[in-house]
Length: 140
Image: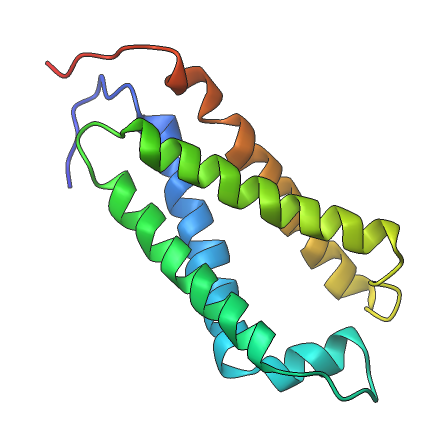
C-alpha cells in the first residue's frame, strides 16, 4: 500500500513489519513445526514436553499476522500499539529471566547472538510506540 511522503506512522509501520516478520513469521513456525529440534538445541539429551513449544509457536505466528495487518491500517490505533508493546515486553522479560537463570548455557555462540538480537528487537518494539501513544494525529 502506498502512503504519502508525510506519513506520520512510517517509523512505527517499519518496526511493526520487521517484528511481525522476524518474531511472528520467522520464529513462530519454527516453534510450531519443529519443537523437538528447538528443545534439543536448547538442552541436548533431555526429553522436553513439546506442546508448550507448539503453543508458543502458534501464538507467535498469530502475533506476527496481527502486527502485519495492523501496520496496513491508515491510522494505527492504540490497541495495536499497546498489544505490540505488551507482547514484546513479555518476550524480552522471558529471555532476560532465562539468561539470568543460566538457561542458555548450552547454546552455541550463534544461538546466543540470535537470542540477543531477538531481545534487542523486542526492546526496540517496546520503546518505538511510546512517541505515538500520547499524540493525537489527524489523518488528512
